[in-house]
Length: 162
Image (cartoon, rainbow, N blue to C red; front, side, top):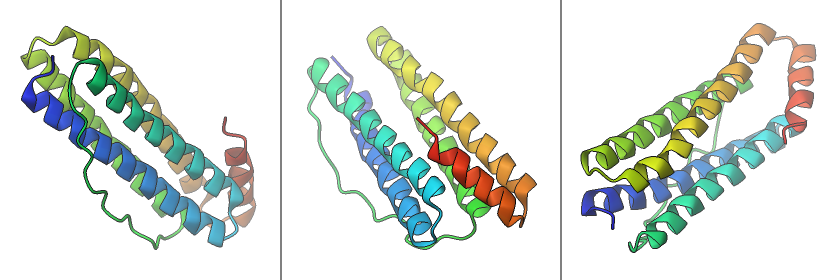
């Protein structure tokens, strides 16, 4: 059984994962309206990942006999800057998600909840990948600068995300 503190924080995490999906969908909408289909495609796939992360917490809470309590999701921003500015926001956001996962892991350690530690290990590894991907794209965008050709190439590469 989950401690009350860990249960509450996991329910908060569901909300935050769904907010992440909303944020990335909002970024996708921005890219779509700017005719950057590859960037939009990447963001839509990222939004889908975040939804699946929320569902992992949803299922885990139920597996452990807890009750999922859904909370309201804040509206994400609707206007954004250049692709490099957006991916700087993505990296910052993913770093905040990493901090949240670390908080959950710390609670599980304090509670001697080995099952939750094992569950959260997947998210610890996932966040390494998420930060790496955001950093890599941000670095490409910094190198591209204002080169439209380079932005088109990056846009094309992001279409290919699986």
